[in-house]
Amino acid sequence: MNQDMSIVHLVLNASVVVQLVMLLLVLVSVASWAAIFRKLYALKRVKNLNEGFEREFWSGTTLKELFDVAIRKTAGSGPMERIFASGMREYLKLRERRIGDAGTLMDGARRAMRASFQREMDVIEMNLSFLASVGSVSPYVGLFGTVWGIMHAFTGLASLQQVTLATVAPGIAEALVATAIGLFAAIPAVVAYNNFARDIDRIAIRLETFIEEFSNILQRNVNVPPPPAPAHGQTHG
Image (cartoon, rainbow, N blue to C red):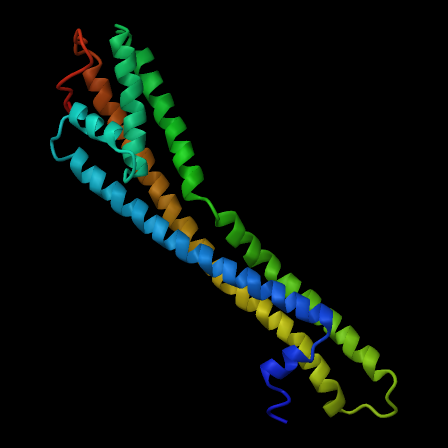
């Protein structure tokens, strides 16, 4: 009896529709775990790159030096560094055009940084919607498999003269496995989604804080006369 009621036996003896539902849920679960591990690695990398650039930014290195390093990087730069490069590039372009109006300079730099910020957040939030979908839909897919399995089991019992618990239990147990697999796919996705959403909110707040701090630094440099060549020796204030 123990062998007959094992998970493997129940799956192999389930109806074709229930087996297809189980297979779908297993594939979704595997894809969900792959997305979770990729996102864990990506967020850890983003945090490390942001922290490294922030330390360099406040270490006393000039803005020009930081900008030269940022534009030379083809890979390995973090979101904060790319936002900095976008704002600094626009600021220097306007300065080279001999634009001295503080409002124009700051609006241009802020718009560039905001656009870069939005692009970075779009990349950081990638796959979150997939985890949310897995967490919300998987239990219902499993429930569909269970309902179908129970209907199939009772249809098969209709031809029997005498129905006992021993004849009903296997069919119902086979159907309930689909719900169990649906929950197995959904629970990790929901937990991961909530944790990632919290971490991404923190990253977004940190990037927005940096944009404001960097804008203040640029604001202090607005009144410095623009040099005849591309800006040199810009400092943090």
